[in-house]
Structures are given as structure tokens and as C-alpha cells.
Image 1 (cartoon, helix red, strand yellow):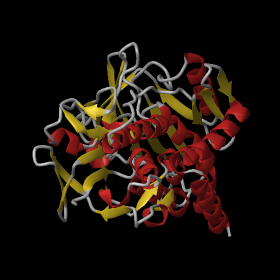
Image 2 (cartoon, rainbow, N blue to C red):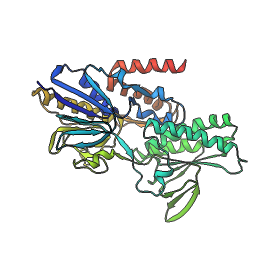
Image 3 (cartoon, rainbow, N blue to C red):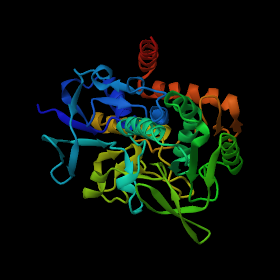
Image 4 (cartoon, rainbow, N blue to C red):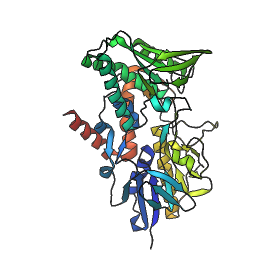
Length: 405
């Protein structure tokens, strides 16, 4: 008897959670599960701002998929997905083709440049582990090059975006730059760190009071904010901005874009209905008209009761994966009830460096400072628990021990 073929695309929070949940099931030889991912590792997206400034090494943030997966139950394919052919129920990759009966799509996000001229050519980002590592290398290069000059002019480091990712990156930068400057013999006062945000407030996705707190803490660390400001273009040495109708050029030595992401380009190239790489799924997380295709993670668009799309993050990605796996098992076993996705708000916390943070608890309480920072660290391990249970937490703790030796 030919086994039912289940293919999972992507090993981010959503795809890995789905894989680990499915490998716990006793599906036997009747179901063949394949995970396709372009890297041999899963990386913690919530830690990328630390990789970007050298706080975390690649080893500290990555998990070897071949160690996480039970390769007797999950076929792991290290390859890059190039196309989804829903008519033929076929996945095309750089090196092959894979037939599916059921598909779980969790391909994740990519940078959205909003067609800003020069952004693709000159901006750095922290969307992936490789990009974060590359940014840290460029920070070191930029500082070293500056140290070889007469240092008469300031060194301009500009962050495009004052949202969640931008604020977390700024928090780490303000703590690590003084150390890096001392290493290369630069007066830290020579560094001009700027944030450019289109909205009139920092952290527009949070309560106004929380955004104000974060901005005040970062201003104390000499971050200069340009709020209500549009980025019009970027070159290797300058950035053109518009604020209150006034256009000006400001110098830039290193620019990091954190302001926008969109779903994976393969989604828009498929024949699934999509916009900006995201598919608006049904309540059971399947694609309309394709009951055998589940979409989870950043590429799945889901709206709340008011019709507002949920913002992609690790928590909602994990919850989508668990719901999708439940519904897939209902279909595979032909028993049980399909479950609609219902988002459980567990709160959100943004760090502002190692010892400070802001956030909102699941009950809507605003939290600030040291206590919020402690909860942030705890929540990092809660994510690991939700993805892979205690074994994943144990693996991370042992890894930290070996890295610190």
C-alpha cells in the first residue's frame, strides 16, 4: 500500500513545531512525512538582534535539525523550495521534485523594501541568522575602517524602523557599541546612532505609554529618533528622508532595515490566492479550495474578530502549527472534529537591552523595566517548551554551557 505523503515546507517556529508534533504520533508506515528546509538548522528568530551585535554566537542560536528530528519518522531534505504546483500536488526544489497528498506550508518571511530606491543594494537586515551574522561582521568592519581615519566626523549608524525589531536591535546596540569601540580605540561619543520611523511614535504596535518609555530609555543612551519620517531613498553614503514635507539628506555609514517584511516569494508565484506572500486561510488553516493544504507561520494571514490581521510572531506561529497538526490528524485518521484556529494571547514583551524591557501581559497589564526583562528571558524558554518540550530546553541549556566554556 502506497503511504500517504505529507510534506512540510520550512523549519521555522511553525514548520519545526508541526514536524515535532507529528513525529510524536504513531502513524506507522501508512504516512510518510518529509520536511524540506534550505538550512540544516533551525534558528531562534527572537534572538537575531543579539546575533547582530555579537552577544549570541551562531551556535548559541541554532539547532541542528538532524539532532532534533527522529529521522526514522521524518524524512529531512536539505534543499531550497522553488515552486508549489497545486494542480500536480508537487513541490519543486533546486535539486528535485516531491509529490504530496497533504502539504503544510511554513516558509516564513522576507524583507519588504517597499520599492525604496537603493534599499536592496545598501541596507543590512536581521531577518535570518545569516543576515544577522553578516551585519555583525559589517559593524566590526565599519568600526575598524573608521578607526583608521582622523575621526573628525561622527560615524552614522542608522536603523530604519522603530517597531519591535528596531527597538530590540537598538537596545542591544546601545549596550554593545561602547565595548566594541573600546576594542578598536574609538571614542564612543563619535558614534551617532539614529532611528527613523514612519509612524509618529516608537513601537506603534504597542500601547503609547510603552512606546514612550522605550524611546526615553534609548534617548538616555544617546539614540536620536526621527518620528513621522519617510525614507525616500538610500545610497552608500547618505539617506534621503522626508519629515513634515521637508526633504533632507543625512549621512550614513551603516544602514539597517527593520521596518518591513512580507511572506515568502514562492507563495506569490504559486496559484494560491495571496498578497505580499501571504495567504488568507480558512478557520481550519487550509487554503480556500485546497482542503489538503495547510498554511502556517508568517505566510498565513488570519484576522481577529474586528477583521484586523494578526501581526506575525513566534507565539502565533507555534499556535497555528499546533492547530494545523490537529486538523491534519483528523483528516488522516478520518475521525474527530476539525478545530478552528483561536489565538490565545499570552502577552508580548520587547527587550531594550539585557536588563530592560517593556510589554503587555495576557491580561492587558503594562510592564516595564527589570521585571519585564526577567519575564522576557523566561518567555524565550517557554517558546522552546512549546516547540519541542523539555528536551529542547535541555538541549539549549547544555549548548549554553559548552559555548561559555
